[in-house]
Amino acid sequence: MAWVVLIVAGVLETVWAVALEASKGFSRLVPSLVFVVALALSMGGLAYAMRSIPLGTGYAVWVGIGAVGTALYGMAAMGDSVSAARITCLVLIVAGVVGLKALH
Image (cartoon, helix red, strand yellow):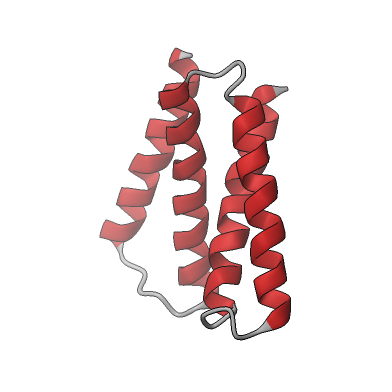
């Protein structure tokens, strides 16, 4: 169950990162509220998961999911550049996250 919660928390990291950008420096109410709620749920999920997942593994997986999700969102919806090198780097992050899970 801790791994499911950790994965959801990582996805919520992407949500709060996107909402933070959309809030335009907390000048827009709805994205600011989404940021606060997603951040609290993401951190809460990380804290819960770390009850049974080691610190280094849990944090690295959480950050990896959030980083890859945010980068993919940026490429798909925000016009961030897409290149073979960027995709390769994201695949390497995913491989690292899967490796940490496999070694747990």
